Image (cartoon, rainbow, N blue to C red; front, side, top):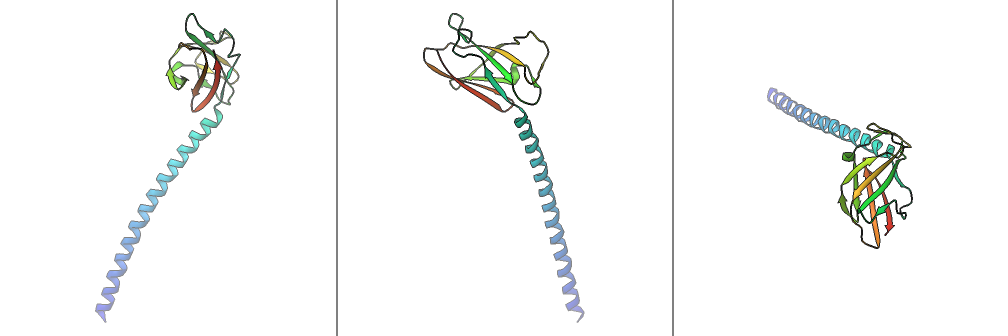
Length: 151
């Protein structure tokens, strides 16, 4: 009868070890999942609060200067948060190709690195445009604004 008790004790201890291993693995997985979801939530909130619009008349001579080959975009921060008024934070694509922002200024001559909601930035991009239709996209912190222009 003692052998039956020892056998049951060994099986009981083994099942406790298996249960403890499974529980610790699941706990670690749940913690990792929680951290991932928190990070995704913060990134999504950041994108929701960020919004920009290309403003102004894209058909005017002020938009594209044929003699210099410069495209000038007026971009307004229409979101709820401050953005950085730096060329490293703004990406421009013309007809699907990356175009470097050569100059960044403000029509109101304000200074500083903060691009507050409601403020407009003037972006100058050196990129020759042929006659016809062109698609221009401005990307800022996950937000994208696209406009189609005709030259």
